[in-house]
Length: 27
View (cartoon, rainbow, N blue to C red):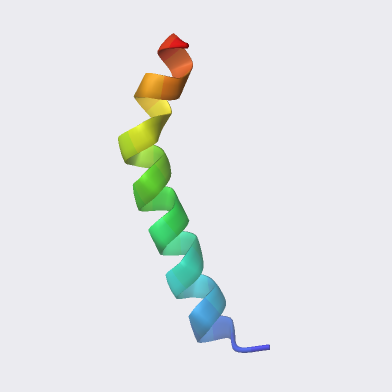
């Protein structure tokens, strides 16, 4: 288990949620 990979993945997910979040909220 690599904490660094987990952190990078979490950051990527957060960025994607920031982009997609508002659109999903409207649906």
